[in-house]
Structures are given as C-alpha cells and as structure tokens.
Image (cartoon, rainbow, N blue to C red; front, side, top):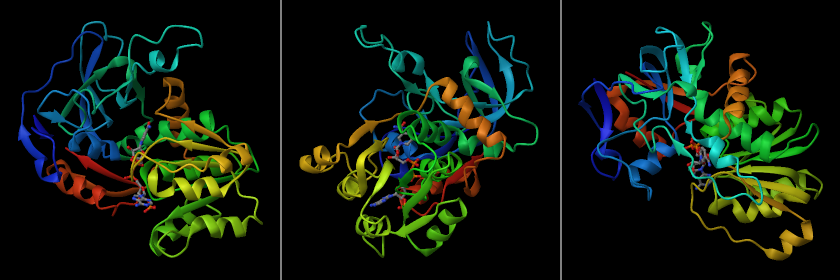
Length: 341
Ligand SMILES: NC(=O)c1ccc[n+]([C@@H]2O[C@H](COP(=O)([O-])OP(=O)(O)OC[C@H]3O[C@@H](n4cnc5c(N)ncnc54)[C@H](OP(=O)(O)O)[C@@H]3O)[C@@H](O)[C@H]2O)c1
C-alpha cells in the first residue's frame, strides 16, 4: 500500500510517500480502507521528535475514517463494509480511571498515529473497540476532520471546564482545529463566546462559527480589550492551548473564581504565573487531555447531528502530505487539512 511516512525526525522534508506492505489485523483488530485522514498539530510534534519511543518508519495520522476491509480473530462482530471513524485514544479508561487513594494505572494513554501507525495510508489497522459507525449522510472527510479535535474540545470545555449557560468563555488560537470546535461547543452550551485569532479573514470565519466577540491578536492586546469589553469583569472560563504566548494575558482576562483550562502548549511549555493574580482571583488552573470513549461518542454525535462541524480548509491527495505538514506548521490553516489516499 501507499503511505505517507518518515524514517527519521525532522522538518516537513522528512515526510515522503512510499510503498509498504499491507498491514494485517491481529486479535481484536480490524483493517480499514482509509477514505479520509486529517492532520492535527500532534502530527507536527511527532515528526519533530517528541520524547517517545516509536518504531521507524512511522506512519502518522490520528484522524481516520473509512470502510472496514478485513477483521482479525475476535472482531467478527464488526461487519466488513461498515463506514466507521476511529477514536484515536488507546487505554484512556486506564489513564483516566485511577481514583484517589488507588495505585496509579498500569497502562498509559497512547494515541493512534502517535504511538502506533496511523491513517496516512491506504489501510490502517486499529482495535475494533475504537470504532464508531458513521451515518450514511456524513462524509468521511467531515468525520475524520472532527475526530481528535472533537473529543479534545468536548473534554476541555464540558468535562474539565464545566461550562454553564450564560457564562463568558474565551477561546484562544481560535482558527486551530480544537479551538474551532471549542468555540462551537461553548456556544451550543449557551455561553457568550469571546475568541482570539489572527488576521481579518480568520476573525470573520470565527464569527461565522458563532463567537460573539472576536479579537485579532495581530491588531490588539486582547487581554486589555476583553477587560474593557466586560466592564472589568473578565471571563468565567478560558480554553487555551497556545501556551507561553497567551498565559499571562489569560490570567489577567480571568474573572473572580474563573477557570483556565490548558490542553496544549503550541508556543512553548512555560508560562509566567502571577501568584497574587492567582490567589486574589481565586482562579482554578485545570489540565485536560483527549477524552474518554464516552466523551468521544458525545462529541461525534454533535457532529453527526449537524450541531458542530470541523471546518475543512482543504482536502489534499495523500501524495501532498509533506505540503500539509508545511502549511499547518506555517499557521496557514483555518480548522483542518484532510488527506485522501
Ligand atoms: N492535550 C490534548 O489532548 C491535545 C489534543 C489536541 C491538541 N493538543 C495541542 O493543542 C494545540 C492545538 O492543537 P490543534 O491541532 O488545534 O492545532 P492547530 O490547528 O495547528 O492550531 C493552533 C493554533 O494556535 C494559534 N497560534 C499559533 N501560534 C500562535 C502564537 N504565536 N500566538 C498565538 N496563537 C498562536 C493559531 O491560531 P490563531 O492564528 O487563530 O491565533 C493556530 O491556528 C497543539 O499544541 C496540540 O498539540 C493537545
């Protein structure tokens, strides 16, 4: 089969399309004929060489939608020909399930396309337990585009952020894959949504997604502008993955007893925290990563019901995988890039 892969870590140039043997499903696994596989920022981190142990060459791609093509032993309940999308989390239940006082889980969260081969190929092998069926009227491209970002946004906004109707919610990096979903989910929950993005085109697009107030970070200091626009009250909830570049402004933009949910650190892993701001505001800082299998289903149901969608910037043939890496790295993408084998 054809696959977009890399043999060593590095810049987008390490990505190439090669012929590799077709994979065969093992016990409890299925093989999917991939119809659409979307890019995430995660694919950039993995290609650059996150400190994890992965086998080379590595096929990326955590967002996989397609048709079940073969089933392994013990997966006979999955019909060949089923239209499916794949929950990218492996062992999330273990990772999320350790109750206080219990010993730490014995298995760690792993992600398809990061720790295991992913969907940037003609075929992908995944656990049967990770499949959910895609309704006939939902295109594979839409299902794949929404997959990892949908569950991440749901867990950050709803589970960790506990958004409530009428609250003010700020989403930073609003043109990003997860953020475009977070804007819509916060809006759907009845929040008043503030967002920060870059450039006039992105401002218009984020408004179209349902944000009430959108700041162009290239033009204004959003922390100050938001403080003024909220009568020096600030926002109840911030959902951020920009990291270092927004951390300080975010703490200032938070209202009394506000919650700051962090699920990423695109611009750097260290943020300066003013401790007096933290305790004076009685602020809560919460971490969030991916989501449970139940979260995944809830997020995808919102997509299937047409309540939220992952905006697709462009659909490219698999052969242009390197270009997809370059464009996402350059910050030129609104929402998602989808690759089609
Ligand atoms: N913990 C988890 O489970 C989890 C899951 C998914 C993603 N993540 C992490 O979350 C981050 C976002 O992921 P994604 O796939 O949504 O990424 P993405 O589509 O590449 O979006 C990243 C966005 O960050 C903003 N940004 C980039 N540089 C910036 C800067 N210097 N200052 C301010 N904003 C900047 C840009 O938005 P604007 O131009 O609109 O400002 C960009 O669109 C990544 O770091 C990813 O690894 C974590």
